[in-house]
Amino acid sequence: DCEDVDAIFVPYGGGGLTCGIGSAVCNHNDETKKNQCAIVSCEPETAAPMALSKERGEISSFAKYYQPSFCDGCGGKAVLSPMWDLANQVIDYALSVPLSVAEAGVWTLHERNGVVAEGAGGLTVGAAMFCPLEKLGEGVKDWKKVVCVVSGRGIDRSKLFQILDKYDKMEAVANGCLSANWTVRGSNATMSNDASSSASLMTTSSLPITTMQEISKAEKLTVLTEKEVEQKLPMHKCIQSTKEALIALSNKTGKMPIRQVSQLPQNEIQKPGYLVTMPSYHDGYAACKLITVYPQNSNTPKFSSHQGVVALFNAKQNGQLLLLADAHQITSTRTAAASAVATMTLARKESHVLAILGTGEQARSHFVSMLETGLPIVQVNLWGRNNDHALKLKEDLRLIFNTYEWKTKCKSTMLFELDVFSTVKECVEVADIICTLVPSTDPILRGEWIRPGTHINAVGACLPTQREMDGTCVAKAALYCDSKDACFVEAGDVVLALKEGSIDSQDRLLDEIGSVLIGEVEGRVNEEQITLFKSLGIALEDLTAVRAIHDAS
Image (cartoon, rainbow, N blue to C red; front, side):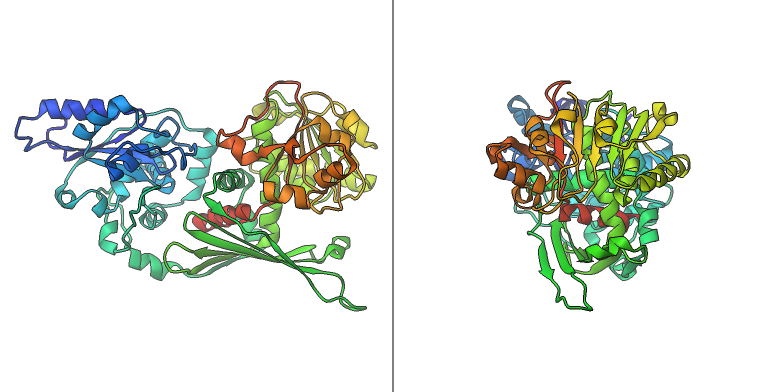
């Protein structure tokens, strides 16, 4: 069936499929191989040992750069030795494909062909459409027809929703892919920014292709308000972007200097305030959150205690400022999203009862994020220091439940109960998941109230002088955090537990949640274990969130 085909793009996992097809092509063609089509292996940039090995000319380990992705089953940490000689014979080109290009393939197959493809299948289609010409040699200019093998495991539903939400038309897909970085991790190769290298090999339904110069002209500065950020950064999308940030921090692909906090002058008129900058870099983009923090604003509805912007820059090419977005809404959403990532990673799969301690904005954000984990939550317990505020929260959450555009909420959560409790003990004693969202200086949650198997997201106390949990609570739990560098400096729950001797050393911290996500550290070990995620917020979460907004814009 492939007599007139110039190339076959195949996802490379262990090598069996790619080498099998390559061998068949070699055996089918005559000895002169005049009509032989090229075999192009495709791996995700996060797991591309064949591309790296072909680039170096010898089997090379990719373990240093490896991280899992939605292209599950494709790529790996190393090339199998028995496959190396055969692969060299039958594979003409080995591509390390950016994940954004794989997403484009999944989107195209769904929107143009009505096919729900897994990541590996999207990988080959995206590679055939958007691979820079210099990656495939001079002969590629004469190619007229290529075949893409769509194979691999099924795609995660939430990831599919995220991809479909990310792009609204083919032009957006093309623009994002043509600026992708195709450099093989671990090599010295660099990508040419010449527009001729970004030509499309294949178009679907007369796909209009935009050149790099046209992209540059079109990318004008976008400024988004709080409401616009809320619309473009729904919780399910932010959960995915936050997961990427936590992984990037733990596998060292993301850079994030310590946040700078400057105390502003204070007098009888000027209230106490701070100016905070949080820079970060990942995957060709740089961002900086610039905010003022005025704690006394929490007593008035006119101003938020945190106000500012997150700026996104193109650090891959020219440093262009791409987007300014309201920082308050990004912070609110990504903070709750981080708890969702930790909960999906550490909580028991049969978690039914959620306890929310606190009645502020994060209580509402966490309600959404916890339901978007897909866990079968059927009971939500509420507690607040002000009972009237707790009752108002109950009304608000009921309204959110009925009006929010849910994406991954479990079907069993369609009918659930909301209850307000007068004490923290009553609120948490039957909870499977607890979210503490109170900036307190005295513990509100005690270890003796926590039942076995509970998962805790500790979010409210983000200064070394604040704590929501007593030392017993911290000592009973398997402790994880978002940033090891910050945990023993800024997290009062941990700092004070160490100081008072409730925990004996920093070894009590198992690791960052990102290390669990990439498989370097074990997560929950049994159904009885109490797990604790200490969240402080990291700048990379702002970067990946604002990048997701930019992609959607």
